[in-house]
Figure 1 (cartoon, rainbow, N blue to C red):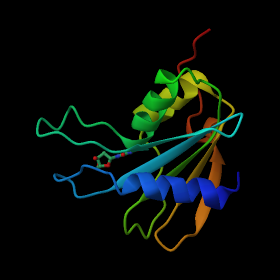
Figure 2: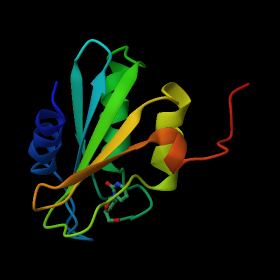
Figure 3: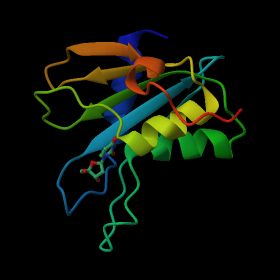
Figure 4: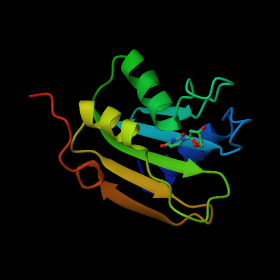
Length: 128
Ligand code: THU
């Protein structure tokens, strides 16, 4: 799958964002080693603390479907003129399953950057 296609799938998921409190729509698409993609969006809650990030929603869907082999994740935020990256908790969530994966972040104008998860989360709390 191309980077562009994965970003497109993240943007598609963003449309389902439930974010009446922050009004920040976020979408994510995580690609497994066989090309299967799981999408997620941020889901806010009036209790605020119960909010789920788009990345975690995507990972939850994938893991619930039996997948833990992630190659890449793409993240898109609505009208974003800056690159948005996964929050610390989402980085750790990704690290749990696929420390070698790549993280793509796309801006509203379609430009995107790619970083290794290891670069975004150096010295993680490891399993071993
Ligand atoms: N959010 C994500 O979906 N992913 C992140 O990595 C950080 C933040 C969401 C949570 C909340 O609904 C909105 O963005 C504003 O913080």
